Image (cartoon, rainbow, N blue to C red; front, side):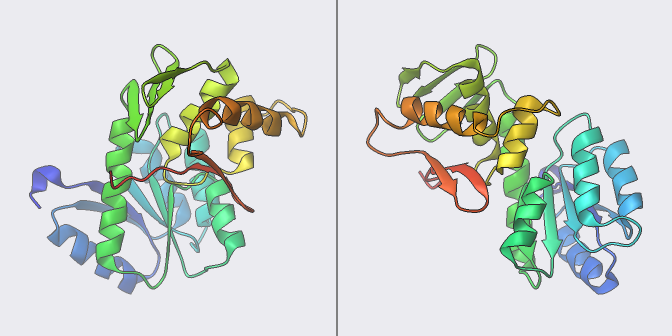
Length: 232
């Protein structure tokens, strides 16, 4: 890989041996890394420099990874792709990570090659999402005209339905938790507990019901995602 294709990565990791292994591999592949060994320092770097991806450890001194991730989401002026590293592998920890806004999750021990592939995928997806029109399998979402279609057929969506579909498309292939959806749709304003369920139901009636295969899937205990074959 040439340097022109390399990513600018922020690695927030307090374990020297892990940081060294990641740095040696990534730099050999042509990527440029900045480093932080504490959560507060990592947060400062993330908010004051441009990174293609942030690799974020969960257990950090001064400020844990979940707090760092959540604060980046609250204060950053753009979406910074975040891949969280952790020694934990319980579903609760993964849900907590996605709830605070991480884009992907890798459990230690992991393959350095897989780490690089995940980082490249996150960066590529983010660049695609920066355009007004996003094409994802059979779905096309045009954020400028606020229109969407499936298999070339226009989808007549409400404003809320379009916003939910846009969030799911931008997050693909990751799961979007109920709390993430609620925050992005209504912010800090309280809403009825069944409001999200009602909007998802209406969205499915338009995006899925008229077609042979449903695209919007419920991930038990985690949230919602799109069922799309990326290999095509």
